[in-house]
Length: 150
Image (tube, rainbow, N blue to C red; front, side, top):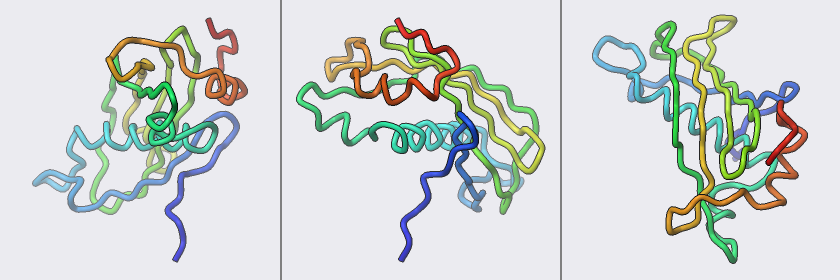
């Protein structure tokens, strides 16, 4: 049995294929709006899993940490439908203190269906902001558009 894919990279953009299933749709056969957020989460998580460490590893550290989304600006442009083959595109733009700036889109072929500008913050388990671990910041470095991390 093969492992599920965590996607692949095209330049500095991570590409994650996603198929739309019946459970993703509303009564009209269109993807329910909240499910685009789920697809975006999978893209961000698999990007980190491939270049640095996944969420489970972050929680297992001596100084456990996690990420929380602090801001998300979403633009719904076109609807996805049942059985569509989509691609979640994720680019980590910058690290600014505890914040990660991320740009994402969901496409079907050459059509962009949804776009999101995301800000996620690194936190300790008490919810206090903290900088991402040095190893993670270094691993993300080559993938960032803005190489200057504060």
